[in-house]
Image 1: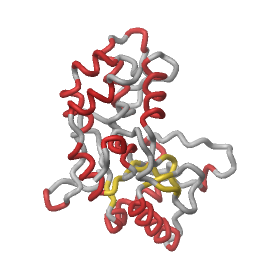
Image 2: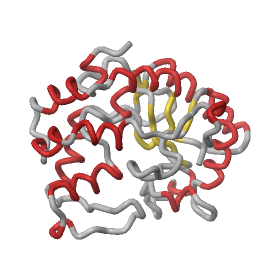
Image 3: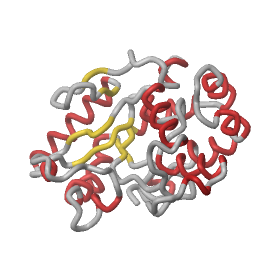
Image 4: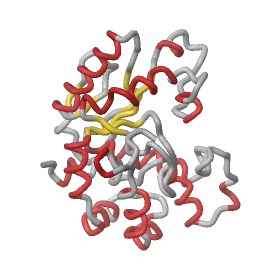
Length: 238
C-alpha cells in the first residue's frame, strides 16, 4: 500500500533505480525485477528493450502540464494532429492536454508501476529521435518488432497495456506498460477529495477549472483504461 505522498507523486522513496537502465529510471522493486526478467527474455529472443520513462514525480508532471497549458509545448488531438492553442477555450485546452499527458497527481507514472518502453537500437546513432508516437510501434516503425513481442509475452511477466486503444479519454499508447497487481491497488486508492487537496497546494495551470471538473476528469481520463483481465472478454493488447 502506497502512502498518500507516494500515490500522488510527492515522494519517490517507494522506487529504486533499475539495473541496466540509464540513471534516474526508477520503479517499485518487484516491478523492476519483473521488468528485468522480461527484458532478459526479450533479449534471448533477439529483441532489445529499454525504458524511456518510468517513475515521474508530481513536479515533473506539473512542468509538462504547465508548459502545454501556457503554449510552450504543442497540443494534439486524439489523432495526433497539431492544434492551434490560441483558438481553444480553457476546457478544450485541458482536454487536449489530458489526451496525451496526465494531470499532475493523477499520473500512473507516480506509482512506480508503469513505464514507457522502446527499442533503443534504431536510435543508437543519434540520427533518429524517439518521439513516443503510435507510428513508431506500427508496421515498418522502429519499435514494431518489440511491440509484437510484448503483445505475446508481456502478460507472462504481469504487465498489460492500460492504453491499448483510444476509448474517448487518453490516446492509444502502445509504449505504456503497467504492472497489473500493484497498479490496480494504487488506482483503487485515487479519489477526488485527496486529489483536490493535492492540487490546491501547487501552481497547476488551469487549476480552478480542473478542480471544478475533477469528477468527470477522473472518470474519463483516470478510470477509463483497457481491462487487463482476459476473462472479461476484453482484448489485452489492442
